[in-house]
Length: 590
Ligand SMILES: O=C([O-])CC(=O)C(=O)O
Ligand SMILES: [Mg+2]
Picture 1: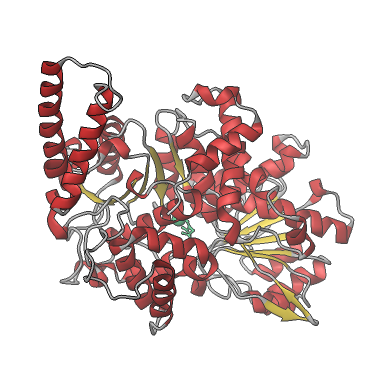
Picture 2 (picture 1 turned 180 degrees about the vertical axis):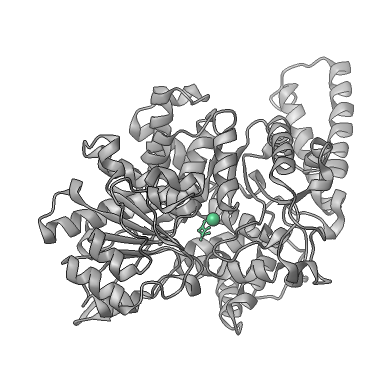
């Protein structure tokens, strides 16, 4: 920070004081009080600017939190024709000239550091072009290469070696009072890419950029966190550039002790913080969500966020599918290919599709089948992981069946949902069988990133003769078919977490309930415009993300109020229009 900025702060304080002491508007003032106040303000401002300022305390290697554009340079220090809007175009042209997406990621990451408002303006203006560069799928490559492309710290690293001392580590965060949302990963299952250890930091950074762009959360309110509990990926352990601890992952017992301390200390250090768990390996994802969700404001994006976004797309798809087949909505049958945290999480969420239509829980559960790496999941198959038991079939006692085509013939699903991270699992015969079973088959290959998707949009269109109702986790291009353009849905949790998280922050919820997650899903499903519906879209256009997030946030806040978990009770008195205006007003605009 330059001295100019420092003196500007001091002079602003001075004007404030003069106003308070009624000097500027002519009233008398007690002289000794003013002198004391002035001295106090000078000391306080000096301490704040020198000691607490992240630019100074961390030097240029350190964190930059505040979204400052470069200070206005003096005359002669910029070219004569420099202007902000033309500079936006220049920056976009520089971005587009990069040879590959990882280079673009690195360029954008540097831009975020140098001129955060410009970075976010570009994100908002060119949402569909930039989202895949700062988030899925490119963020997957960035994570895999993290230790090689690393430039500077962008968040907090808390390691198992810090156990017993986590409070002190968290207190190093430069702006604790501003902290509102943290995305916390342990790097153990980043997208579908497996255990990336401390390289998982990229996913926390990417999600939080979308919180800022998509919901207008202030950049300095966000804390990306990567927990370093070791990694079981040998190539990283052998890589001299790897940035994490050189050790295998710790036991579940040790991790749980660490997590207990971490959650307790993070909630004490940042009392207004919402925690989003991200990309923990399956059992730990369920374990820690269950363990902390009643005690702290926390949600798991892969279980609940993905569940909500798929429920939303499914509601819109099921209506279109039922219109074509005449099948009642309650009779849909959903086959999950992949039974990890996302698969089972989505299954749980999709049950509410049926319970909302009036089916009892037992019947709703029976609308869902799971397939894992050993085939159909059923009770008499043998021992199975705890999280699969709920959907394990009691009504099938035959031999194990592994072949997906055979399973399709047995179950006759109306919807096939992929969360397996197995590319090409939905090969042409699978798609065409779905199209024979249903006039409008619902096929959602949700695995990330693109190259692990169970099928491409182009294949799904081709082998269903354009009848598929499609959503994927990663983005695919529009596809022409029969003289029309068909639009793939992107069933990615990026539609949900900005609005859900923003609501939780504004209402200062004590916990994130299932009904709030369901409300986010219904909010998303209802946010399509008439035009989007007429184009057969299952999700709204991502370029409207701010509007969508505001609408979702309103629905979630209302639900939090009904459930009595809101601590900002002042919002209860607002009518819907006032609440929406309040949410809009709270969004940061770059
Ligand atoms: O990050 C994404 O694109 C969606 C997600 O949470 C995951 O795949 O784990
Ligand atoms: Mg995730």
